[in-house]
Length: 146
Image 1 (tube, one colour):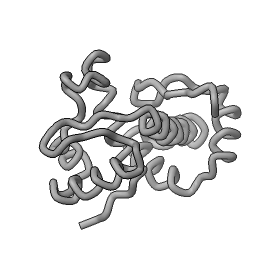
Image 2: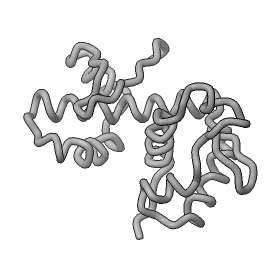
Image 3: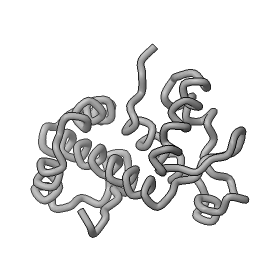
């Protein structure tokens, strides 16, 4: 069984977060992100997710009570947006510049996102004219503080 990194979790959680209605994203009475959905997306066990959730809470990236939904903190949301931004910019590069098959860009971007520096991502983003939409039609999060 593969081990998912913190960035893998944050990217997966952000993708799930995007599917939640805006009100439910931050309101702890709202829907939030479910551990079971993270496990399904990453194809890992629920105990592995629970272990990482505890680590992410200690890093102050998320808030969660036992057996409840997960919510990003401001710090965690910013980091998750950074990770997703990097991933989706690489997807655009692979599709638009290298003509990679759309079915392969996610997997390839996943491999590359862990090796590119922030400096390189900024240059790539600028080279691509700060793309707003990924090849899969999802918004590329841009933070003005990058």
